[in-house]
Image (cartoon, rainbow over all chains, first blue to last red; front, side, top):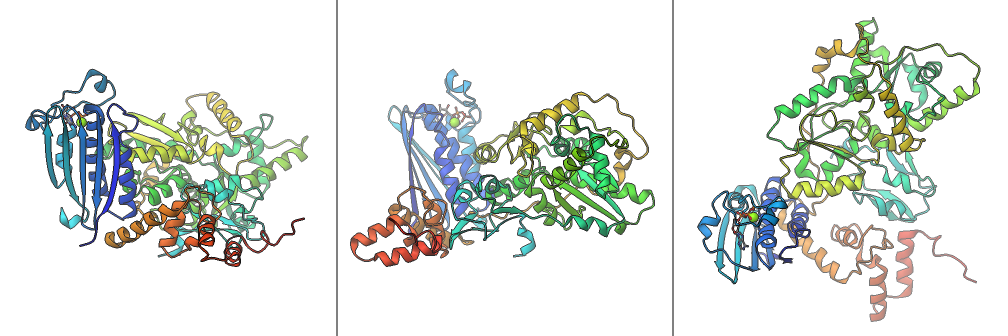
Length: 145
Length: 450
Ligand SMILES: Nc1ncnc2c1ncn2[C@@H]1O[C@H](COP(=O)(O)OP(=O)(O)OP(=O)(O)O)[C@@H](O)[C@H]1O
Ligand SMILES: [Mg+2]
C-alpha cells in the first residue's frame, strides 16, 4: 500500500469569499491524477458543501485530505456550535441558516443530503458548543463505486 | 495519437523569434516553452487562441494561410464573409462596394457567414430546450473555447452543444444553392475570410466531424488590405450594385458579445475574454449552476470583433455592426433562394459528433503513477522559488516541476537552484553557463561588457 498524499486547508467562519477554495484546490489535484470527470464532480460537490457548512455554521475549521491510488478521504473538522440532532440535520430541507446566510443563496437544507448522495462512506461526529467532524471517503476508480 | 487532430494554425518563426518569453507568459494553457533561445509550441496543449500572437514584440508568431490562387481550382468561387469583415471598413465605404471588389478580386459569389445564424438560432434554442438534463449548455461557436474545454475542463465537454456553427451552415447552404442552379459539387470552392487562428484550426482539423465544408481560408487582414487598396485607388469608379443582404439584426450581431445569449430562451450569460472564461469555467466545475440555461463563451475580448487578425479597433467594429443592425428594415423580403428554403436539406447537416475530452493536465494515465509524480512535483516545489521568472524556459515554477517529473527538462535549469548548488560547491559556473545557453541560445550570453 502506498503512502497517501496529504493536503490541508484552513477555513474561517463567515468568510464566504473563501468558501470553495479547498474544493477547487482538491479538484486541480484530481485532474492531474487523471481521475475521471464524474468522480471528480462527486468529490468536488461534496467537499464544497462541507466547506460551506463550516463557513456558514461554524467559527473556524481545518480540512484534511488524503489521496491514495484507490480513494480520497476527507475530514472537515470545525470549532463551532455543533449539531444537536444529526439525524434531523441530514433530512433534506432542514436548515437553521440565518436570514443573512439565506440572502447569500445558501440555506436550502440540501448540503448534508447532497454529501450523503455523493460519497461512498460518511461519518459525522458532533459535540454541541464544541464542534463538528464530518468524514467521508470516495473511491477514485469507477469499479470501486 | 493522430497528428491531424492537433493541427494548429499558429506557428513560430525560428528566424524571427528572439526568445523573450512574452508569449510563454500569456499562454492560457501553458503550451509554450523556450528551448535553444526560441519559443516552442506544445501541440497537445495549444488551443489556437492567439494570445501569443497579440503580445509577440517581433511578429514571430505566424498564422498559416492558404494560397489565394487556390480559389482558381474551382469554377464557382464563393467567399464567405463574417460580419466583422464588413465592420473593419470605415463608414464611407459601403457593403456594396466591398462585395463588388471581392468579385473583382476573383470570387464569383459572396455570402455572409451569419446567414447560417438565421437557421441556427431556432435549432439551437430547441436543442437547449430538449436537453434539460444538461445545464448550463455551452455554445460551440468559438473554436478556441471548444478546445479550451477539451484540454483544461474535460469534465465540461458534455455541456458543449454539438451543433454546427453559422460558418459551416452557410458553407453547406452556398454549395447547395449553386448545385440547385446547375453547378457540380466539385466545381464549387468555398473560402472563408477569418478573423482568427482558431477558426482556421477548426477548418483544418474540425472537432466532432471528419472534414469541413470550407475549402480554404483567407486571413481577414490580408483581405481587408486588398479590398481597401482597390477601393481607395478607384475613387471615382462606380461599383455595380450588388444585392442587399437581408440578414436579420440578430444574425448581424451573432458574432459579437451577447450575440447568442440575447437570442436564446431562458437564463443566459455571455462572457468574453479568455481569462474571464477560464475563471468562470473553474467556478462552473466546482458548483452546481443548473439554474443557468445557456453560456455564450468567446475567447476574444469583444468576441470576433477582437479577433487576432482584425485590423480595425474592436470597439469601432462592434459599433459599426450595431449601427448596421439598427438600420435593418423589417421584415426583409425573402425569395426562393433564401436559406429558409434550404432548412430541410441543412437539417441533415446540423449535428456534429460528441466532443471528446483530451486532458492536458494529467501527470500520468494511471492514478497510482500520477500520484507518485505529483509527490515528486510537490517535493520540487519545496525548493523552487515561486518567482515564476521563466528563465528556466518553462512558464512557472510549477510547470518546471511538472516538466521535470515528465522528464522533459531538468530542475537545474532554475537559476535559483543553480545558485544553491554553487554555494554547496557541487556546481560550477561553467555548468550553469552551459545550461543557460541550452535554454537561451549562445547569443544572449556571449556579450562584451565594457
Ligand atoms: N459544520 C456545522 N456546524 C454546525 N451546524 C451544522 C454544520 N453543518 C450543518 N449544520 C446544521 O445542519 C443543518 C443542515 O445542513 P445542510 O448543509 O444540509 O443545510 P444548510 O447548510 O442549512 O443549507 P444548504 O447546505 O442547502 O445551503 C444546518 O442548517 C445546520 O443547522
Ligand atoms: Mg450546507
